[in-house]
Image (cartoon, rainbow, N blue to C red):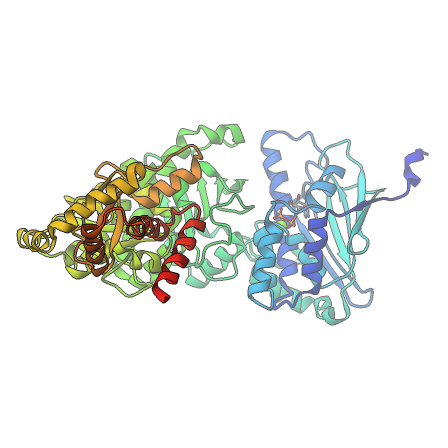
Length: 620
Ligand code: ADP
Ligand code: MG
């Protein structure tokens, strides 16, 4: 006999993050414990798909001819729940690194945030984070996993969770390829020993699993590739359930696109727009976007070649006969077939979005609020569809209440007859943009300004220089065109003393500013900073500084409101005595105040000190 047989089980400690995760699962209040079953079945299905995929290239592996199946046994008397599959199995390394570890970093953090937001933590969310297996701890305290990996020379292994912070692995006798997971249910969850209960859950979540599932010996699912059905034969309910099945989402989708394309390239596809964005839309989370099938055989999850980056909010699958059956991952990366499919999907998706925008404004707004930040990036990257994407963009606006969004087209329809440009202003939030002194002129003249408060806007706007022949112009750029009358009115109000005050401003501020000018845009504020003709808008510069520490923002132009009482007072002081210290520090204070509003004042100490000085003088 071999001596390793009697080797003792080896113990492992979970990483700290894993411990916290287990703690979160075990001690949270769940609303739907039943999803543990969906997660187990989904893992078995993944494991079986891997065998199916392997079969495409060779048959030199363990149990090559054994049918691909899932068996579930429940036994109330023996107090046993078990699920077994003839899937790929797990090596020792898999047991440690796949089963015993959280897939993507940051997962725990997000789960904790969700937990904090909503007191009862919905177990449904678990599957979205690649920690589905651990949802079983909702219904049991201890899990055993017996497994044997797909390679001929593999050995049977038993993984056991032993307490909240440890697991063990030992060698066992196991002849067949695949994995068996079994456990005893906690007192409160004995209902899951009832075959009828399990059957209902399986029908709800696992009807689309593409492998036969047996429950206590009886086959219970009807396998069907619904994307191969005719559009009219697929019911809404069926689509919704299918979406939830492949996406791990718990809400119905917002919209779906069902494609059956023949000709230059042949494929069938079911694509869905989710109801809401995943918590880490921009981060590389463990997620399933669009799956690739070849002639009904699953090839790979999350096939990046099927979608441009900006449409990666879509979920679903693509099934094509145009790929060779032994398609490999390397092959998908440069496949002209996939490139063609990507083009078709892109134009169909854009057309579908146009249709929603046209016919169901509320739905489109929902889409845009959730995925707009990602979608907008198409303007920068997809030149051939730039016009369509630009048409589909939406922004908040000074003409609309907070929260409502509008298109360039709608903006133009509201434009005044003499208005030639589309005005916008960027900022951290709608509130900040609204309070920007540079808007005073636009408010006074009732000119609509688009409020661009999404950080992504500063990347996309430079790519859209005009819409429908109307130039896009930032409201903080220097050259405001005012009417002749307004010009003469301003001139008449600008006394000579103010003009010479401006010289003093220049003298005090020296090369801190590019220029000092009489403002045509200010109404209520004494001063503001604007960007020169060639300069980038303020928000854009902030972003550049953030990305590139060496980047120095261009100098601003300080505009002075010569009709403002404070400026008039300073002008009088200036005539009396231009060496007056109060006058000079007032100028610096005005400049730094404008910097502060724009978020550029690096060190507020001097500014605050001066404020105290002024207060002291004003209160004697
Ligand atoms: P995910 O399925 O999203 O990767 P899970 O927590 O559900 O996350 O599973 C973790 C990992 O454990 C899987 O990626 C897989 O490597 C492994 N695993 C779980 N169940 C099985 C199974 N039945 N057969 C083979 N591997 C499995
Ligand atoms: Mg899983």
